[in-house]
Amino acid sequence: MKSLTDTFGRQITYLRLSVTDRCDLRCTYCMAEEMKFLPKRDVLSLEELEQLAGAFIERGVKKIRITGGEPLVRRDIMTLMARLGRRLEAGDFDELTLTTNGTQLFHHADVLASLGVKRINVSLDTLDDAKFEKLTRRNRLSQVLRGLDAAQAAGLKVKINTVALKGVNEDEIAPMIEWAHGRGMDLTLIEVMPLGEIEEDRTDQYLPLTAVQDRLAEQWSLRPLAMKTGGPARYVKVEETGGVLGMITPLTNNFCAGCNRVRVTCTGEIYMCLGHGDKIDLRAAMRGADPQAALDAALDRAMLKKPERHAFDISKRGAAPAVSRHMSVTGG
Ligand code: SAM
Ligand code: SF4
Image (cartoon, rainbow, N blue to C red; front, side, top):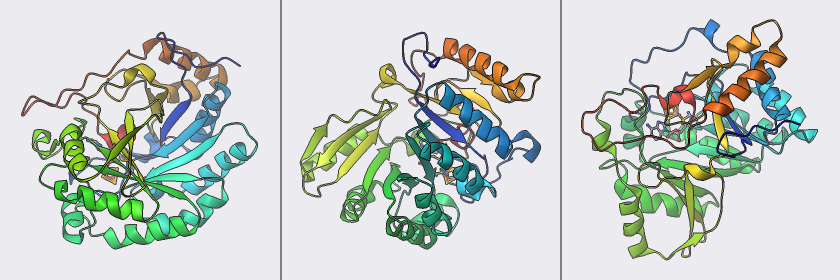
């Protein structure tokens, strides 16, 4: 089998596949209230998503994360999950997982577990109803909490992803870690990344996790863990709660040397790096005469283009985002 290896010798084994740019929430750091979503015809069909995932599996990808937008708002998403679940069961790859905002989770948790999904990431930035509504512009916290209950009852291991936002959930970070660990869920904090135009200035939202960690260390013993995921997260064990705390610090800490992932949008564009604009159109390859060969060749081209490192900088107030596309386009 021909592997996916870039010019820096990094092997790509992890695909993050976005299945929609739509969402039922409007998190202020992620989207504007009035988002212009893609016309449906531009979005990959279920069959195309399956074919695409298959091409990556053939090239040695072992982990596939389905994301968005909100993946669970796509109507036929569970059909795709079921088809990928069959390949998972056959041993063609090792892990099928999902990042979700949790609002639709109570409908799907049981089925996800039955398809072989073992772990999911649920994004949740606050446990306060009013703050949740302000932050996501929708009143859905209780729905998310119901989803979490359903996921855990179905036996799914849940990791909570929390974006650290200055003056918004800053004071809730320690209580949320306690809450998550108390329920047997790990929690990972994320720094705001400059992706896509929003209505607010991200300089105002940016809270460096180095400062958060220093504050947490006054209260708890944080033991560094050697967990390596090939991604931007670093992990510590919180001795007092017994749980794992992750920190994703793209801005204060460079993590690119061990990068093992690529992202594909719901229109079939492969981005080799979250922090760069370079992309290759896989949909065109798939809709051509010899999809298999064209896809393979396009993936080879993508590997030649994967940059050595990202180019984020949030320090300039009022500056345009480093990358103009929203996280909901590339997938988190
Ligand atoms: N809708 C799903 C969700 O919220 O989990 C999946 C897609 S969402 C784009 C994936 C992750 O990206 C979420 O954890 C979200 O908080 C995070 N995210 C979105 N915009 C971000 C930004 N500008 N900086 C940092 N994280 C961001
Ligand atoms: Fe939707 Fe996720 Fe973006 Fe929030 S972070 S608006 S839930 S895609």
